[in-house]
Length: 112
Image (cartoon, rainbow, N blue to C red; front, side, top):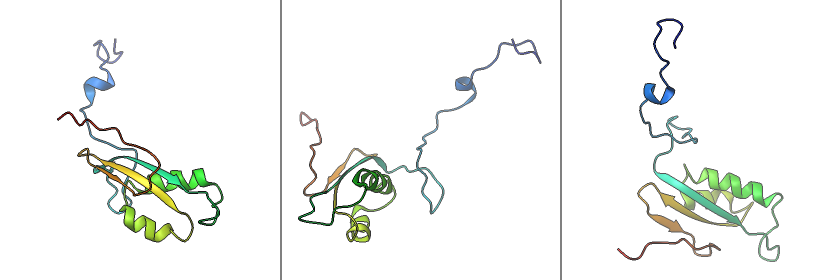
């Protein structure tokens, strides 16, 4: 019971309405990211092809986060001097973009 009015307490779920949110905000407009659903990044660590980055997992995490708000080609241009990476992106419309040498496979439903 609510001490103030003797009514049963309302739950947060009853008080709120469903809102589309994301934990990442676009720094330009301050709004939640809406057009990207998921990203993956693999940082290449073969020192024979590219300088071995320090903390490759941290670079991969940072690049994957950046891909939520940055075009992958733009990100590659900005980071190519520091890291060599491959990526995959799934948009909120369920479209996928995968770089040429991404070391993973996206499973799709080809029955439709």
